[in-house]
Length: 127
Image (tube, rainbow, N blue to C red; front, side, top):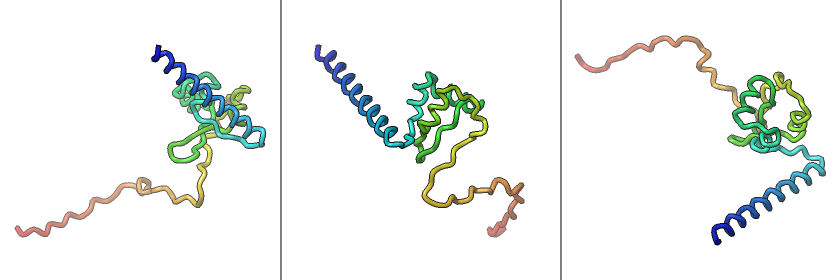
């Protein structure tokens, strides 16, 4: 009996949190903000798994997730609405620009320099 009550309490708390999230999202939309939706919620809205989304993105059927910060991605609500409306040609949207506070450092191009000449071996040990 206690176990069932604990499960129902946990389910009730989960439903309350979901209701709070929906209310917060509705307030943002009403304020004219284009909120960023987490990937799992985007996939759930469309009815596909994350791997299916990833495969579809590689084929140009779904847009790429926008990187909000390292390890945190999402999709703007306006773009999710376009996907839900049936847009399936995202091949031109290879990726979204990463948001940053300043100029980006140039990427390491050491691999693009071509073959590296072998370094001369120097042996300082006496024979």
